[in-house]
Image 1: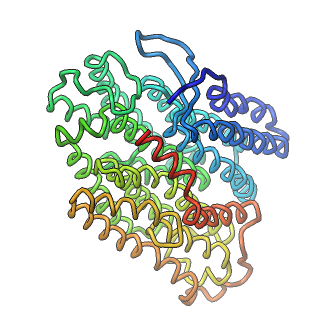
Image 2: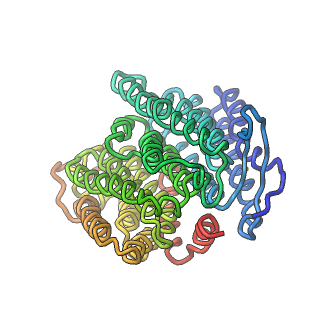
Image 3: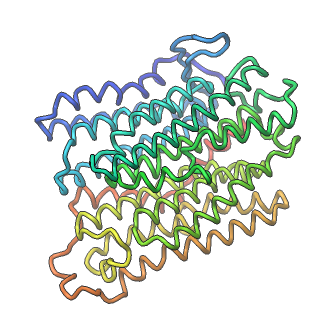
Length: 490
Protein backbone atom coordinates (compact mmCIF):
# COMPACT_ATOMS: atom_id res chain seq x y z
CA UNK A 1 0.00 0.00 0.00
CA UNK A 2 1.37 3.40 -1.00
CA UNK A 3 0.74 6.37 1.31
CA UNK A 4 0.52 10.00 0.25
CA UNK A 5 1.37 12.80 2.67
CA UNK A 6 -1.83 14.77 3.12
CA UNK A 7 -3.56 17.13 5.54
CA UNK A 8 -6.87 15.24 5.12
CA UNK A 9 -6.39 12.77 8.00
CA UNK A 10 -5.69 15.67 10.36
CA UNK A 11 -8.68 17.59 8.96
CA UNK A 12 -10.95 14.59 9.58
CA UNK A 13 -9.85 14.50 13.21
CA UNK A 14 -9.81 18.26 13.90
CA UNK A 15 -13.05 19.36 12.24
CA UNK A 16 -15.22 18.34 15.19
CA UNK A 17 -12.60 19.23 17.82
CA UNK A 18 -12.43 22.80 16.51
CA UNK A 19 -16.18 22.69 15.90
CA UNK A 20 -16.73 22.41 19.65
CA UNK A 21 -15.75 26.11 19.89
CA UNK A 22 -18.66 27.60 17.87
CA UNK A 23 -20.98 25.09 19.56
CA UNK A 24 -19.99 26.46 22.99
CA UNK A 25 -20.19 30.06 21.78
CA UNK A 26 -23.78 29.43 20.64
CA UNK A 27 -24.95 28.49 24.14
CA UNK A 28 -27.84 30.99 24.16
CA UNK A 29 -28.92 30.27 20.60
CA UNK A 30 -30.02 26.59 20.49
CA UNK A 31 -30.94 26.63 16.80
CA UNK A 32 -27.51 27.95 15.84
CA UNK A 33 -25.76 25.53 18.20
CA UNK A 34 -27.54 22.55 16.67
CA UNK A 35 -26.98 23.86 13.15
CA UNK A 36 -23.25 23.92 13.90
CA UNK A 37 -23.47 20.35 15.17
CA UNK A 38 -25.17 19.06 12.02
CA UNK A 39 -22.87 21.03 9.71
CA UNK A 40 -19.75 19.71 11.45
CA UNK A 41 -21.07 16.13 11.45
CA UNK A 42 -21.91 16.31 7.75
CA UNK A 43 -18.53 17.86 6.90
CA UNK A 44 -16.72 15.10 8.79
CA UNK A 45 -18.59 12.43 6.81
CA UNK A 46 -17.65 14.18 3.56
CA UNK A 47 -13.96 14.42 4.50
CA UNK A 48 -13.82 10.73 5.41
CA UNK A 49 -15.76 9.73 2.29
CA UNK A 50 -13.42 11.80 0.08
CA UNK A 51 -10.53 9.51 1.09
CA UNK A 52 -12.47 6.30 0.49
CA UNK A 53 -11.82 5.87 -3.28
CA UNK A 54 -8.05 6.11 -2.78
CA UNK A 55 -8.14 3.50 -0.01
CA UNK A 56 -10.33 1.15 -2.05
CA UNK A 57 -7.77 1.41 -4.87
CA UNK A 58 -4.98 0.27 -2.55
CA UNK A 59 -3.64 3.67 -1.52
CA UNK A 60 -3.71 5.68 1.68
CA UNK A 61 -2.82 8.95 3.38
CA UNK A 62 -0.35 9.86 6.12
CA UNK A 63 0.32 12.96 8.23
CA UNK A 64 3.08 13.20 10.83
CA UNK A 65 2.25 15.50 13.74
CA UNK A 66 5.47 15.21 15.77
CA UNK A 67 8.16 12.71 16.77
CA UNK A 68 8.67 12.61 20.52
CA UNK A 69 10.18 9.11 20.84
CA UNK A 70 12.76 7.65 18.41
CA UNK A 71 11.00 5.62 15.70
CA UNK A 72 7.59 6.38 17.26
CA UNK A 73 6.08 9.56 15.81
CA UNK A 74 2.64 10.87 16.68
CA UNK A 75 1.28 10.11 13.26
CA UNK A 76 -2.03 9.69 11.46
CA UNK A 77 -2.35 7.13 8.68
CA UNK A 78 -5.45 6.25 6.69
CA UNK A 79 -5.40 2.58 5.72
CA UNK A 80 -8.22 0.14 4.95
CA UNK A 81 -8.82 -0.87 8.56
CA UNK A 82 -8.85 2.72 9.79
CA UNK A 83 -11.14 3.76 6.96
CA UNK A 84 -13.52 0.91 7.84
CA UNK A 85 -13.94 2.17 11.40
CA UNK A 86 -13.91 5.89 10.53
CA UNK A 87 -16.65 5.42 7.95
CA UNK A 88 -18.92 3.67 10.45
CA UNK A 89 -18.25 6.17 13.25
CA UNK A 90 -18.65 9.33 11.16
CA UNK A 91 -21.88 8.21 9.47
CA UNK A 92 -23.46 7.17 12.75
CA UNK A 93 -22.38 10.38 14.48
CA UNK A 94 -24.42 12.30 11.91
CA UNK A 95 -27.50 10.20 12.69
CA UNK A 96 -26.87 10.53 16.43
CA UNK A 97 -26.57 14.30 16.15
CA UNK A 98 -29.99 14.49 14.50
CA UNK A 99 -31.44 12.14 17.09
CA UNK A 100 -29.90 14.11 19.96
CA UNK A 101 -31.69 17.28 18.91
CA UNK A 102 -35.10 15.60 19.17
CA UNK A 103 -34.27 13.71 22.36
CA UNK A 104 -32.65 16.56 24.31
CA UNK A 105 -35.35 19.05 23.36
CA UNK A 106 -38.24 16.69 24.04
CA UNK A 107 -36.98 16.05 27.58
CA UNK A 108 -35.76 19.66 28.04
CA UNK A 109 -32.39 18.36 29.25
CA UNK A 110 -30.02 20.72 31.05
CA UNK A 111 -26.47 21.62 29.90
CA UNK A 112 -27.21 20.84 26.25
CA UNK A 113 -24.31 22.97 25.03
CA UNK A 114 -21.82 21.01 27.13
CA UNK A 115 -23.42 17.83 25.84
CA UNK A 116 -23.02 18.72 22.14
CA UNK A 117 -19.50 20.10 22.66
CA UNK A 118 -18.35 16.98 24.53
CA UNK A 119 -19.83 14.83 21.79
CA UNK A 120 -17.82 16.76 19.18
CA UNK A 121 -14.56 16.23 21.08
CA UNK A 122 -15.36 12.54 21.56
CA UNK A 123 -15.86 11.90 17.84
CA UNK A 124 -12.53 13.64 17.14
CA UNK A 125 -10.84 11.22 19.51
CA UNK A 126 -12.63 8.30 17.84
CA UNK A 127 -11.36 9.31 14.40
CA UNK A 128 -7.91 9.80 15.92
CA UNK A 129 -7.93 6.18 17.08
CA UNK A 130 -9.16 5.02 13.67
CA UNK A 131 -6.38 6.84 11.82
CA UNK A 132 -3.54 6.17 14.27
CA UNK A 133 -0.36 4.91 12.59
CA UNK A 134 1.06 3.35 15.75
CA UNK A 135 0.27 2.33 19.31
CA UNK A 136 1.47 5.60 20.88
CA UNK A 137 -0.85 7.73 18.75
CA UNK A 138 -3.72 5.32 19.35
CA UNK A 139 -3.09 5.38 23.10
CA UNK A 140 -3.15 9.19 23.26
CA UNK A 141 -6.46 9.41 21.41
CA UNK A 142 -7.83 6.48 23.44
CA UNK A 143 -7.22 8.46 26.65
CA UNK A 144 -8.63 11.63 25.07
CA UNK A 145 -11.82 9.70 24.37
CA UNK A 146 -12.00 8.47 27.97
CA UNK A 147 -11.74 11.99 29.38
CA UNK A 148 -14.05 13.65 26.86
CA UNK A 149 -16.85 11.14 27.45
CA UNK A 150 -16.82 11.51 31.25
CA UNK A 151 -19.08 14.64 31.15
CA UNK A 152 -21.49 12.69 28.94
CA UNK A 153 -21.68 9.72 31.31
CA UNK A 154 -22.24 12.05 34.30
CA UNK A 155 -24.59 14.37 32.38
CA UNK A 156 -27.45 14.17 34.88
CA UNK A 157 -25.18 15.21 37.79
CA UNK A 158 -27.10 13.15 40.35
CA UNK A 159 -25.59 10.67 42.81
CA UNK A 160 -26.08 7.70 40.48
CA UNK A 161 -24.45 9.51 37.55
CA UNK A 162 -21.45 10.56 39.66
CA UNK A 163 -20.99 7.04 41.01
CA UNK A 164 -21.22 5.61 37.49
CA UNK A 165 -18.75 8.22 36.24
CA UNK A 166 -16.19 7.26 38.87
CA UNK A 167 -16.65 3.61 37.99
CA UNK A 168 -16.27 4.44 34.30
CA UNK A 169 -12.96 6.26 34.76
CA UNK A 170 -11.65 3.69 37.25
CA UNK A 171 -12.15 0.86 34.77
CA UNK A 172 -11.15 2.71 31.61
CA UNK A 173 -8.17 4.73 32.85
CA UNK A 174 -7.05 2.17 35.42
CA UNK A 175 -6.72 -0.61 32.87
CA UNK A 176 -5.19 1.51 30.12
CA UNK A 177 -2.52 2.94 32.44
CA UNK A 178 -1.98 -0.20 34.51
CA UNK A 179 -2.14 -2.84 31.76
CA UNK A 180 -2.02 -1.44 28.20
CA UNK A 181 0.80 1.05 28.85
CA UNK A 182 3.19 -1.59 30.29
CA UNK A 183 2.35 -3.85 27.34
CA UNK A 184 3.34 -1.04 24.96
CA UNK A 185 6.66 -0.61 26.74
CA UNK A 186 7.38 -4.33 26.45
CA UNK A 187 6.57 -4.26 22.72
CA UNK A 188 8.87 -1.26 22.22
CA UNK A 189 11.69 -2.93 24.14
CA UNK A 190 11.60 -5.93 21.81
CA UNK A 191 10.62 -4.38 18.45
CA UNK A 192 12.13 -0.88 18.75
CA UNK A 193 8.96 0.53 17.22
CA UNK A 194 5.22 0.70 17.85
CA UNK A 195 4.16 1.01 14.19
CA UNK A 196 1.18 -0.92 12.90
CA UNK A 197 2.42 -3.25 10.19
CA UNK A 198 0.74 -5.92 8.11
CA UNK A 199 1.88 -9.23 9.62
CA UNK A 200 2.93 -7.60 12.90
CA UNK A 201 6.21 -6.35 14.37
CA UNK A 202 6.93 -8.91 17.11
CA UNK A 203 7.91 -11.88 14.93
CA UNK A 204 11.66 -12.52 15.05
CA UNK A 205 12.28 -10.14 17.96
CA UNK A 206 13.31 -12.87 20.39
CA UNK A 207 10.26 -12.53 22.63
CA UNK A 208 9.48 -15.87 24.29
CA UNK A 209 6.03 -17.47 24.04
CA UNK A 210 5.50 -16.68 27.73
CA UNK A 211 6.31 -13.01 27.16
CA UNK A 212 4.03 -12.89 24.13
CA UNK A 213 1.20 -14.46 26.14
CA UNK A 214 1.66 -11.89 28.91
CA UNK A 215 1.65 -8.97 26.46
CA UNK A 216 -1.46 -10.29 24.72
CA UNK A 217 -3.40 -10.63 27.99
CA UNK A 218 -2.31 -7.15 29.08
CA UNK A 219 -3.66 -5.71 25.85
CA UNK A 220 -6.91 -7.72 25.91
CA UNK A 221 -7.81 -6.41 29.37
CA UNK A 222 -5.91 -3.12 29.12
CA UNK A 223 -8.20 -1.87 26.37
CA UNK A 224 -11.20 -2.33 28.69
CA UNK A 225 -13.50 -0.31 26.46
CA UNK A 226 -13.94 -3.63 24.61
CA UNK A 227 -15.88 -4.91 27.63
CA UNK A 228 -14.24 -8.32 27.97
CA UNK A 229 -15.15 -9.93 31.28
CA UNK A 230 -14.27 -9.34 34.07
CA UNK A 231 -13.46 -5.73 33.04
CA UNK A 232 -16.98 -5.03 31.75
CA UNK A 233 -18.69 -3.45 34.76
CA UNK A 234 -18.29 0.12 33.51
CA UNK A 235 -20.58 -0.45 30.51
CA UNK A 236 -23.89 -1.27 32.28
CA UNK A 237 -23.10 1.44 34.84
CA UNK A 238 -22.67 4.01 32.05
CA UNK A 239 -26.27 3.44 30.94
CA UNK A 240 -27.29 6.24 33.34
CA UNK A 241 -26.21 8.63 30.55
CA UNK A 242 -28.80 10.10 28.15
CA UNK A 243 -29.87 7.58 25.52
CA UNK A 244 -28.02 9.23 22.59
CA UNK A 245 -24.83 8.83 24.63
CA UNK A 246 -25.62 5.18 25.27
CA UNK A 247 -26.48 4.73 21.60
CA UNK A 248 -23.37 6.21 20.05
CA UNK A 249 -20.62 6.06 22.66
CA UNK A 250 -21.58 2.78 24.32
CA UNK A 251 -23.07 1.12 21.27
CA UNK A 252 -20.62 2.41 18.65
CA UNK A 253 -17.72 4.73 19.49
CA UNK A 254 -16.30 3.97 22.96
CA UNK A 255 -16.81 0.21 22.88
CA UNK A 256 -15.75 -0.12 19.26
CA UNK A 257 -12.59 1.86 20.02
CA UNK A 258 -11.75 -0.84 22.55
CA UNK A 259 -12.37 -3.62 20.06
CA UNK A 260 -10.60 -1.76 17.26
CA UNK A 261 -7.54 -1.27 19.48
CA UNK A 262 -7.44 -5.00 20.26
CA UNK A 263 -7.83 -5.91 16.59
CA UNK A 264 -4.95 -3.57 15.72
CA UNK A 265 -2.81 -5.41 18.27
CA UNK A 266 -3.85 -8.84 16.98
CA UNK A 267 -3.42 -8.08 13.28
CA UNK A 268 -0.68 -5.44 13.21
CA UNK A 269 1.43 -5.88 16.37
CA UNK A 270 1.44 -9.67 16.80
CA UNK A 271 0.23 -10.77 13.37
CA UNK A 272 -1.95 -13.86 12.77
CA UNK A 273 1.02 -16.04 11.79
CA UNK A 274 2.88 -15.42 15.07
CA UNK A 275 -0.26 -15.98 17.15
CA UNK A 276 -0.88 -19.26 15.32
CA UNK A 277 2.74 -20.34 15.74
CA UNK A 278 2.70 -19.93 19.54
CA UNK A 279 -0.94 -21.10 19.86
CA UNK A 280 -2.24 -17.87 21.40
CA UNK A 281 -5.43 -17.86 19.37
CA UNK A 282 -6.93 -20.16 21.99
CA UNK A 283 -6.32 -17.52 24.70
CA UNK A 284 -8.27 -14.95 22.69
CA UNK A 285 -11.16 -17.28 21.81
CA UNK A 286 -11.49 -18.66 25.35
CA UNK A 287 -11.82 -15.20 26.93
CA UNK A 288 -14.20 -14.09 24.17
CA UNK A 289 -16.35 -17.23 24.43
CA UNK A 290 -16.78 -16.88 28.19
CA UNK A 291 -17.77 -13.25 27.73
CA UNK A 292 -20.26 -14.05 24.95
CA UNK A 293 -22.12 -16.74 26.86
CA UNK A 294 -22.05 -15.06 30.27
CA UNK A 295 -23.20 -11.68 28.95
CA UNK A 296 -26.02 -13.32 26.98
CA UNK A 297 -27.27 -15.15 30.06
CA UNK A 298 -27.14 -11.98 32.17
CA UNK A 299 -29.02 -10.05 29.46
CA UNK A 300 -31.92 -12.48 29.83
CA UNK A 301 -32.39 -11.37 33.46
CA UNK A 302 -32.48 -7.61 32.83
CA UNK A 303 -35.84 -5.82 32.94
CA UNK A 304 -34.38 -2.37 32.31
CA UNK A 305 -34.25 -2.11 28.50
CA UNK A 306 -31.00 -0.15 28.31
CA UNK A 307 -29.25 -2.57 30.68
CA UNK A 308 -30.40 -5.50 28.56
CA UNK A 309 -28.96 -3.73 25.52
CA UNK A 310 -25.75 -3.05 27.48
CA UNK A 311 -25.18 -6.73 28.30
CA UNK A 312 -26.07 -7.61 24.73
CA UNK A 313 -23.35 -5.19 23.60
CA UNK A 314 -20.78 -6.86 25.87
CA UNK A 315 -21.52 -10.20 24.23
CA UNK A 316 -21.54 -8.79 20.70
CA UNK A 317 -18.18 -7.04 21.17
CA UNK A 318 -16.72 -10.39 22.14
CA UNK A 319 -17.93 -11.82 18.81
CA UNK A 320 -15.55 -9.43 17.05
CA UNK A 321 -12.61 -10.52 19.18
CA UNK A 322 -13.62 -14.17 18.84
CA UNK A 323 -13.45 -13.87 15.05
CA UNK A 324 -9.98 -12.34 15.20
CA UNK A 325 -8.83 -15.10 17.53
CA UNK A 326 -9.97 -17.82 15.14
CA UNK A 327 -6.99 -16.85 12.92
CA UNK A 328 -8.86 -18.09 9.84
CA UNK A 329 -9.61 -15.85 6.84
CA UNK A 330 -13.39 -16.06 7.22
CA UNK A 331 -13.28 -15.72 11.00
CA UNK A 332 -11.08 -12.62 10.95
CA UNK A 333 -13.22 -11.10 8.18
CA UNK A 334 -16.38 -11.80 10.18
CA UNK A 335 -14.93 -10.25 13.32
CA UNK A 336 -14.01 -7.05 11.51
CA UNK A 337 -17.31 -6.93 9.59
CA UNK A 338 -19.25 -7.27 12.83
CA UNK A 339 -17.97 -3.83 13.89
CA UNK A 340 -20.13 -2.27 11.18
CA UNK A 341 -23.06 -4.69 11.23
CA UNK A 342 -23.45 -4.54 15.00
CA UNK A 343 -23.03 -0.75 15.06
CA UNK A 344 -25.98 -0.09 12.75
CA UNK A 345 -28.18 -2.68 14.45
CA UNK A 346 -27.37 -1.74 18.04
CA UNK A 347 -27.63 2.01 17.54
CA UNK A 348 -31.12 1.37 16.14
CA UNK A 349 -32.07 -0.49 19.31
CA UNK A 350 -30.74 2.27 21.57
CA UNK A 351 -32.54 4.89 19.48
CA UNK A 352 -35.75 2.91 19.92
CA UNK A 353 -35.22 2.68 23.69
CA UNK A 354 -34.82 6.45 23.81
CA UNK A 355 -37.88 7.03 21.62
CA UNK A 356 -39.96 4.81 23.93
CA UNK A 357 -38.79 6.82 26.94
CA UNK A 358 -39.52 10.14 25.23
CA UNK A 359 -43.00 9.09 24.05
CA UNK A 360 -44.17 6.88 26.91
CA UNK A 361 -41.76 7.47 29.81
CA UNK A 362 -41.06 3.72 30.09
CA UNK A 363 -37.67 2.20 30.96
CA UNK A 364 -38.65 -1.33 31.93
CA UNK A 365 -39.61 -4.11 29.54
CA UNK A 366 -42.31 -5.35 31.91
CA UNK A 367 -44.07 -1.97 31.52
CA UNK A 368 -44.06 -2.01 27.71
CA UNK A 369 -46.79 -4.58 26.97
CA UNK A 370 -48.95 -3.38 24.08
CA UNK A 371 -46.75 -0.34 23.40
CA UNK A 372 -45.94 -1.54 19.88
CA UNK A 373 -49.55 -0.96 18.85
CA UNK A 374 -49.16 2.72 19.75
CA UNK A 375 -45.63 3.09 18.35
CA UNK A 376 -45.59 0.67 15.40
CA UNK A 377 -42.75 2.34 13.48
CA UNK A 378 -40.47 2.36 16.51
CA UNK A 379 -41.22 -1.28 17.27
CA UNK A 380 -40.77 -2.27 13.64
CA UNK A 381 -37.32 -0.66 13.72
CA UNK A 382 -36.60 -2.43 17.01
CA UNK A 383 -37.54 -5.74 15.40
CA UNK A 384 -35.21 -5.11 12.45
CA UNK A 385 -32.35 -4.12 14.75
CA UNK A 386 -32.95 -7.23 16.85
CA UNK A 387 -32.92 -9.50 13.80
CA UNK A 388 -29.61 -7.99 12.73
CA UNK A 389 -28.02 -8.54 16.16
CA UNK A 390 -29.37 -12.11 16.27
CA UNK A 391 -27.79 -12.68 12.85
CA UNK A 392 -30.78 -13.54 10.70
CA UNK A 393 -31.43 -12.56 7.08
CA UNK A 394 -32.26 -10.16 5.55
CA UNK A 395 -30.28 -7.94 7.93
CA UNK A 396 -26.58 -7.10 7.87
CA UNK A 397 -25.74 -9.02 11.02
CA UNK A 398 -26.26 -12.23 9.08
CA UNK A 399 -23.27 -11.43 6.83
CA UNK A 400 -20.79 -11.03 9.68
CA UNK A 401 -22.11 -13.97 11.71
CA UNK A 402 -22.11 -16.21 8.64
CA UNK A 403 -18.42 -15.44 8.18
CA UNK A 404 -17.80 -16.23 11.85
CA UNK A 405 -19.53 -19.59 11.48
CA UNK A 406 -17.56 -20.40 8.33
CA UNK A 407 -14.37 -19.34 10.11
CA UNK A 408 -15.06 -21.76 12.97
CA UNK A 409 -15.82 -24.59 10.53
CA UNK A 410 -12.76 -23.92 8.37
CA UNK A 411 -10.54 -23.94 11.45
CA UNK A 412 -12.09 -27.17 12.79
CA UNK A 413 -13.02 -25.21 15.90
CA UNK A 414 -16.29 -26.98 16.65
CA UNK A 415 -16.43 -25.69 20.23
CA UNK A 416 -16.48 -22.14 18.85
CA UNK A 417 -19.23 -23.15 16.44
CA UNK A 418 -21.25 -24.36 19.43
CA UNK A 419 -20.60 -21.07 21.22
CA UNK A 420 -21.86 -19.13 18.19
CA UNK A 421 -25.02 -21.22 17.80
CA UNK A 422 -25.83 -21.20 21.52
CA UNK A 423 -25.33 -17.46 21.84
CA UNK A 424 -27.47 -16.84 18.77
CA UNK A 425 -30.35 -18.68 20.44
CA UNK A 426 -29.78 -16.62 23.59
CA UNK A 427 -29.82 -13.43 21.48
CA UNK A 428 -33.23 -14.40 20.16
CA UNK A 429 -34.41 -15.29 23.66
CA UNK A 430 -33.68 -11.84 25.08
CA UNK A 431 -34.79 -9.76 22.07
CA UNK A 432 -37.83 -11.34 20.44
CA UNK A 433 -40.05 -11.39 23.57
CA UNK A 434 -39.72 -7.59 23.68
CA UNK A 435 -41.12 -7.35 20.15
CA UNK A 436 -43.85 -9.93 20.88
CA UNK A 437 -44.96 -8.20 24.08
CA UNK A 438 -45.02 -4.83 22.35
CA UNK A 439 -47.32 -5.95 19.54
CA UNK A 440 -49.41 -8.75 21.05
CA UNK A 441 -49.47 -8.57 24.87
CA UNK A 442 -52.35 -6.83 26.59
CA UNK A 443 -51.39 -3.61 28.33
CA UNK A 444 -51.57 -3.96 32.10
CA UNK A 445 -52.45 -0.29 32.61
CA UNK A 446 -56.02 0.43 31.40
CA UNK A 447 -55.15 4.04 30.49
CA UNK A 448 -51.86 3.05 28.88
CA UNK A 449 -53.09 3.53 25.32
CA UNK A 450 -54.37 7.05 25.88
CA UNK A 451 -52.26 9.83 24.44
CA UNK A 452 -49.20 7.75 23.54
CA UNK A 453 -47.88 8.12 19.99
CA UNK A 454 -44.58 7.98 18.13
CA UNK A 455 -41.67 10.11 19.35
CA UNK A 456 -40.90 13.45 17.61
CA UNK A 457 -39.57 13.27 14.06
CA UNK A 458 -36.00 14.12 15.07
CA UNK A 459 -36.08 10.92 17.15
CA UNK A 460 -38.12 8.81 14.75
CA UNK A 461 -36.36 9.51 11.44
CA UNK A 462 -32.83 8.52 12.58
CA UNK A 463 -33.98 5.18 14.04
CA UNK A 464 -35.87 4.36 10.85
CA UNK A 465 -32.83 5.36 8.78
CA UNK A 466 -30.41 3.16 10.73
CA UNK A 467 -32.89 0.26 10.65
CA UNK A 468 -33.12 0.59 6.86
CA UNK A 469 -29.32 0.83 6.69
CA UNK A 470 -29.05 -2.47 8.58
CA UNK A 471 -31.23 -4.10 5.96
CA UNK A 472 -29.37 -2.42 3.10
CA UNK A 473 -26.08 -3.84 4.40
CA UNK A 474 -27.43 -7.35 3.87
CA UNK A 475 -27.90 -6.71 0.16
CA UNK A 476 -25.02 -4.29 -0.40
CA UNK A 477 -22.16 -5.05 2.01
CA UNK A 478 -19.55 -4.55 -0.74
CA UNK A 479 -17.77 -1.44 0.58
CA UNK A 480 -17.24 -2.90 4.04
CA UNK A 481 -16.32 -6.30 2.61
CA UNK A 482 -13.73 -4.75 0.33
CA UNK A 483 -12.26 -2.68 3.16
CA UNK A 484 -12.14 -5.73 5.46
CA UNK A 485 -10.33 -7.81 2.85
CA UNK A 486 -7.89 -4.97 2.09
CA UNK A 487 -7.20 -4.59 5.80
CA UNK A 488 -6.54 -8.27 6.35
CA UNK A 489 -5.23 -9.51 3.00
CA UNK A 490 -3.67 -6.53 1.12
